[in-house]
Image (cartoon, rainbow, N blue to C red; front, side):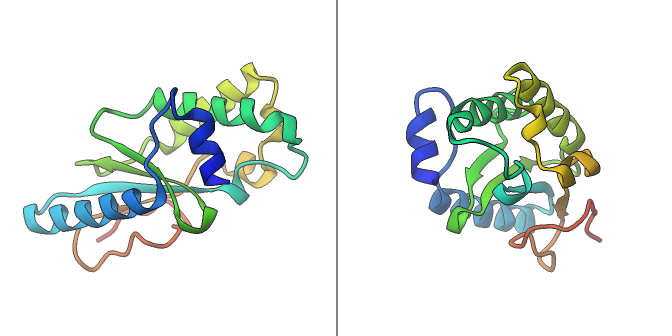
Length: 154
């Protein structure tokens, strides 16, 4: 699936592949440890984005809407990438103690509505109205697992 999405949008949006994204995550953790800085980390598992009713012919316009929604919020220094094992998308909001999770969700809804696909969002995601994220602020904070709720690390 990742390879198909990368090929589909390679000329429109840049998203790191899983290996490079994992490397960037490790680099940012090291940089945060060495320079005593922080960053926000957000994951969007594929299983939590769309309902089962998403039809194959809707996949390309749905992902274009997602990429547009993401692109509008990302700064040049932020990083987006595919996660290992076709799990989803990951985002690093560098030098930040927050992630624009609520605004990202609203952007996705807006662009999906423009493509007449808003009703294909997963009901659990619609109920939450946001994406969970964590803030990495030190060596003892794990950002490798999918966060379960908005939280700020100690």
